[in-house]
Each structure stands twice: as C-alpha cells, then as structure tokens.
Amino acid sequence: MNRERFDEITERYSRLKIGIVGDFCLDRYFEIDPELSEISIETELEVHNVVNVRTQPGAGGTILNNLVALGVGEIIPIGFCGADGEGWLLERALQERANVCLDHFLRTEERKTFTYSKPLILSPGAAPQELNRLDQKNWTATPEGVSLAVVQSLRSIADEVDALIVMDQVDKPGTGVVTPIVLECLAELAQAYPELPMLADSRQGLADYPPLSFKMNANELQLMVNSSTPLGRDEIFREVASLCESHQRPAFVTLAEGGVIGGAAGECPSHQACFPVRGDIDIVGAGDSVTANLTTALAADASVREALELAMAGASVVVHQLGTTGTASQSQIADLLL
Picture 1 (cartoon, rainbow, N blue to C red):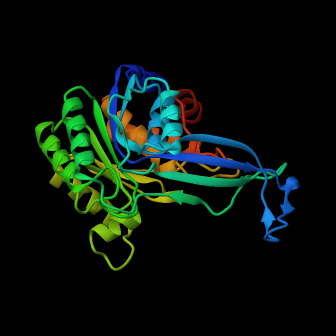
Picture 2: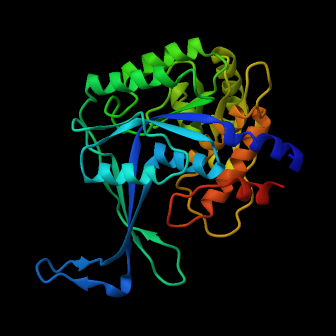
C-alpha cells in the first residue's frame, strides 16, 4: 500500500459511525512495587503493595479503544454494566473516550459488571509481570428484558451506522450481551442490510451465528468444521472461501504468528504475514485490534487485501505495548506500513 492509497482510506475514518454490540468489561490494573513487599502478620503470606490503580474499558471496550485511536467519527457501544462500583468506573472510562455515544449503553441492577482485575509487578528494567487475574462475571442467564433492550437499540441504529461489530466475550453462553434473542435480531439485520459490514467474533465459537462476516482463529475454525486435527493452510483457504460464498460476506481467520487469511465472496482468499518482532511483545489485545482495523477499513471502502494489511500493521503496534491492552493509531500504523 502506498501513501496515497493509505490517506485515501484513512481520511474517511472521521466520517464513519460504527456500532459495537457485545460484552464490555472493566480492565483494572493493580501496579505492584516488589520492593515494598512484606509478610502479613496474620496469615504469614506475602503482601503485594499496590502503588497505582488504572482502569480502561476491556473486551468490546478494547475494540472501542482501537476505534477511538483510529479516529472513527462516532462509536456506539451497545451493551450493559451493573449498577455497582465497577459499572461506575466502566461508564466513566467510556465517557472519557473521544466520539463515544453512550445512549445505548445500559446500566442494570440485574447484572454484575464484567471485570478483569490484573495485578502487575513492575520492576525497574524488566517487563511487567502479570500475576493471577481476578475475574468477576455473570454465571446466570441474561434476563429477557435486558436482551430486549439490546435488540431495541440494535434496530434503532441499524440504518445509521456504517459498520457493526459483534463481540461475545463470555465463557458461559447466554450470560452476556449476545444471547439467542440478540442473535435472532442480528440475523434479521444481516438479511435487511446485506451491504452493511457486520463482523462477529465469539469466544464460544461462531457455529450458531447467523451469516455475518466471521473473524476467528485457526483453533476456532477447527472446532467449527468438526475437524479432529489442526487445519493446514490450504484447508483454511478452502474454508474461508466457503464461508465467503455461503454468507456472501468477507471472512477472516487469524493464525497467531502466522498472520491472517481473509477473503470476500467471488474472490480468492489472501494471506497477510505478521510484521517482524521488534523487541519484547505482549499479545493481549492483538485480536481486538485486528477486528477494529478490519471493520473500519472495510467501512471506508478498502478491499479485503488492504484491510488485511492495515490490520496486521495495527496488531504489530499493539503487541509491542507491554503491561497494558494497547491500541494503534493511524500515525503509528503509517510509520510501520509506509
């Protein structure tokens, strides 16, 4: 990609409106100074003294952070948080992001706020060391009334947005934002808006999803096609082509350090390699950066081939940010790509 084409695509970003429906969590980092370690008198266990706490939106919020960094004109999160302290922190973190509209973000007493608490030991001259994470999740089914509120929001914004991202982050199906009721609505919207980029990513796999654009990793693809062995590259190419034709939408499979394969209906899939590693890396958030860049580029009329190139550059920027779930801006991507 040359500079002229990069500028042609990215100058459209500020005019885009992108919705994200799915699970938004609070990422809370507890920064620990190991030199202040002590032993508890009561338990005789080591005490980690926290010297700083920082918070940011995670899961669907990580995608949102990347859309903000890319300069997307308006971002609409569709989801919920609990009526608890973590929910207050999550809403405040979302409000602090540029160009975010919270009209469709629900606070409800019927759910807890999905939270990742991440203790980090920060030693001079060393990469941050993450200790065991502490998670807060919902383990019961999302109430129907909450799902219907999400559906109402989806229907109200469908003809306004230039793209829609679906992010299902929960471990137990039906306990988050993307419930069967919401999937039924997404199926209706996919049929009603065949030209609208709608990219789905799910920790539970996409086998039961309507015909949207799928973004998954190679292991998730293997499970979806019921293969007993890992798929080879040629097999992944064939499966991507098959998805593109059956859904009549682009499809993408990430290959970790092997890059990404993507395609569109009527086209041969393409492979984009990863950029070379330039030091220590932290892969957390790379996949969400890929999702954000693919969706934004496609909404800005980039080809699948161009979207893959931009996505891999964005992921390379993100993995070199240590001790945080990073983002990639237009200028950072340009510095790497051009």
